Length: 282
Image (tube, rainbow, N blue to C red; front, side, top):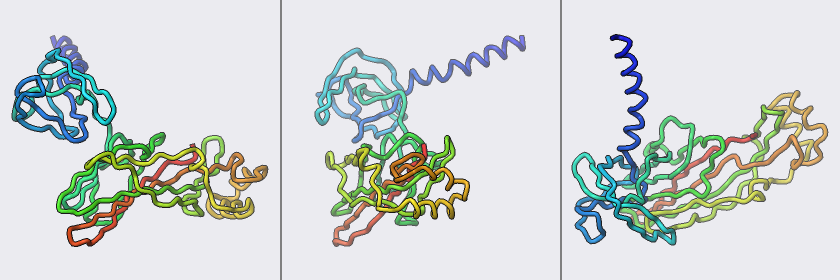
């Protein structure tokens, strides 16, 4: 009997995640999702669900809806859902079984969410209250380029966001690498990011040519820095290199910056900075 109980307990543990995955969904509409009394657009709105809010799907009505959102066609069925406080119907085109990672940044009466970015940081919610600069360690293989930003604020006259990138040199050795992130860099000019609407922005993306830009240096300068920073054994890897564009030398983006200019009603401007640290040498 004890063995049977153990088998049943293990079976429940295995099945439970699949049950939850079928019942739970997350709101992925940037500006929130309306919940209505009935499954149609003319029905009364009884509330609004926030981006990332988990809800329980009661059933799929089978009633299809197609909408156009900023030139993109979104298709889905009306779903009967349950929140902690109410029942209603929502458009299923803005529901997802999984919620992608995001970073959230807070300041006085301001919230900025950066969607779909993977980081190795333990804390995904950060604050500008104690510092003018926030650092984000991006996961290997990801980048803050081309990401959607959702900005919510009040009591501010204007919010402007600019982007800049920094390139550094890395020396590779069949796996291990020496990253000269504290040495010389190529730093781009600040450029405004794309504003989609009143609350949404999109970060800039860079080309292969952008990623490989660097300042003028000689191989002898580089060898001296590698000697001092990485050690003499690393200098040997540079013996056959004639320029910084030859293996084992590589140039790539090491940091991307977002500068947030906050202007209040009295025309006072506050500057905040988000620094994205990009893994190198791979």
